[in-house]
Amino acid sequence: MRIFAIGRNYAEHIKELNNERPDEPVIFTKPDTAVLRNNAPFYYPSFSTDIHHEVELVLRICKEGKNIELPFASKYYDSIGLGIDFTARDLQQKAKEKGLPWDIAKGFNGSAPLSDKFVPVAEFKNLSDINFRLEVDGVLKQQGNTSLMLFSFDYIISYLSKFFTLRTGDLIFTGTPKGVGPVKVGNKLSAYLENEKLLEFEVK
Ligand code: MG
Image (cartoon, rainbow, N blue to C red; front, side, top):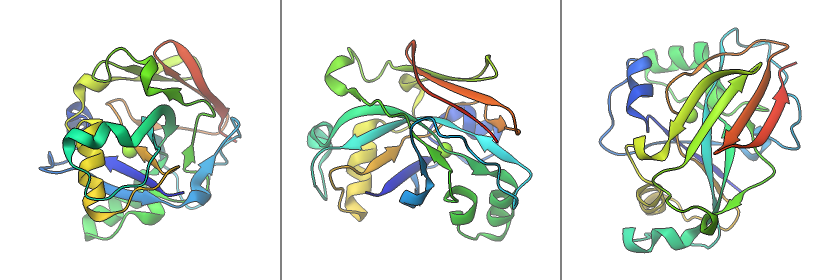
């Protein structure tokens, strides 16, 4: 299983980090050792003092494919879950300044908490109108709707598959809306897809 992730897919989030709006999706990956399941706690790592939450919708690939054309892209994912793309913003900032890769800032152990439940695509009325949000200690921090994505799910699948063969079980983090911010030890994070809480865990 591989984890692909899209950066800078929501305009308001691009603004809050003073990033440039991309012409094509910004792609990075996380290793499978980044995954946390079963609402397992996230242990704050010693190498960073600025870990940020980024709540994201996550697609699950259901069929192997490469060079997938846009009209067929929707056949390659069958369910949608929630994940947190934890980011060591201090390490990422250094990497950005030097033009270096983001791997240690994005792919460290525990940097990808995932919901156990993935909702079948067929249960959504409109994939371009999905609401999701993140609360920290019961306070709303991030709220997104898929209508605000720069690149649609289908476009992301088609684009990624030009470079990487997608396989069943692969996961794609589709980008975070505005409102990213630091977490600290003791915080409780709760993520909702529409009004269903799919993910809840503590920072330790
Ligand atoms: Mg992200």
